[in-house]
Length: 121
Image (cartoon, rainbow, N blue to C red):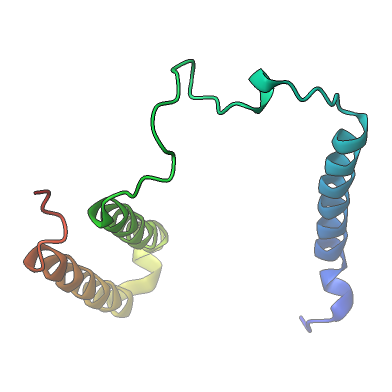
């Protein structure tokens, strides 16, 4: 089947309706919503606990590194689901490609362990 621009019209229409809904909702709530700016409303809300200290205090880089590594390895695992579903159709070449992928993933994991990126001190 030849790809024509008209084939993308439903996607464009859905994008247009979604964008229109977002914009109209934001504009509508801005103009129709209540505007009561009291001291209690402008204070930071911390689940009922009084705010203590400065919110701009620095976090350890280890925290962010652990979070990024979790997301990285989590996304890599997501790539395994379609492979597992189509395992028989992919055959031997698909199996070899997944072994290469897993090898790179394990090298990356061992590199992270060797660099002690996950050690908390």
